[in-house]
Image (tube, rainbow, N blue to C red):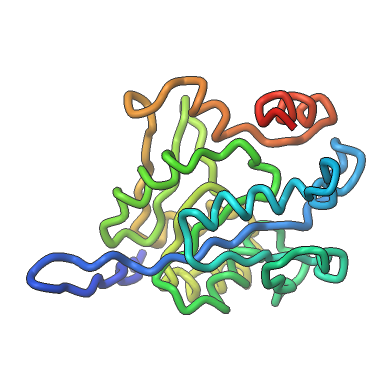
Length: 213
């Protein structure tokens, strides 16, 4: 299989310049197990997804949401983009993010990963060295929605969508993909929190306890 060309970094005084990165937050899952739309949860006057965006804003200069329910997200102070190709799940959201960005990379994040740690994200950024995909692993599992994707992946993402292969991992074998472990760099508690999805009402309570909200 032909691999796509990796991101070419600019060089200043013989040293690689930092790539530009935007953060895209995915909204619009079915939330069947949760029982209601997770993106519309709030705590008092604060929307939970807004808390996530504010944290990411400390790391990235550009934050936006990708959704199939954009008309419900008017409360956000961030741009919201509808899926260009609807009903393709997270892969469709990634396709939209890569289509609209002018940055070298997209940091793709699911809206229910509310315990993400800035230190872990910055640790991943330090390991960006021109690969097309940088995705974390933990105990044999990977998390495609806490990952960095080069804008160069767009053509390959479109190809696998055309092939009706909608698992977001379906194009990893066609591009320069690196898997990154956090073990040894962070505590088990911090890593588990990073991978913790809010799928049930019990999960919501755990998150509220962790965040003291």
